[in-house]
Length: 145
Image (cartoon, rainbow, N blue to C red; front, side):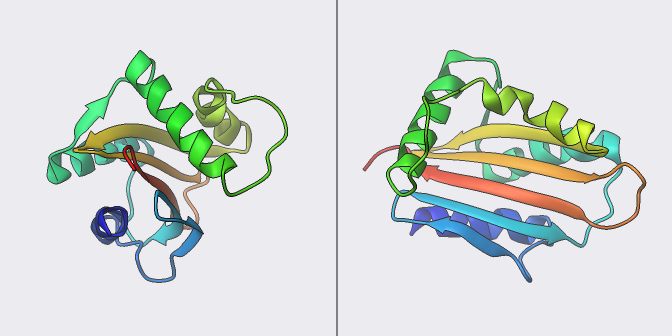
């Protein structure tokens, strides 16, 4: 399956494959969480995400574009098809994600990319103290059935 292959490549690049766990695994969507062994400086989180998209030959999307909003809506529908979630889709919630991590005393960055008919959302975060690992959350979604 294409989503698993892409997720495996990304987790491998981040040295986060070992011990990673799938939070959701369907035919359309894969959510994986893990801890990276890499020691990346806070200011390098964004460039690291950009480099991953380059390595995959994926188009990195502007997080505030209509295209990104459409992809977020598709991902949300895929998640809601598996899990009962109360309330309406909040595509703007993803924009508050970085602020939420910063309020928890973490450095964080995220990015969205598209590779053929697959969307990839990557979130990297680490404690501001510099102690502990960098965490990875990855959502890989088939955009077509």
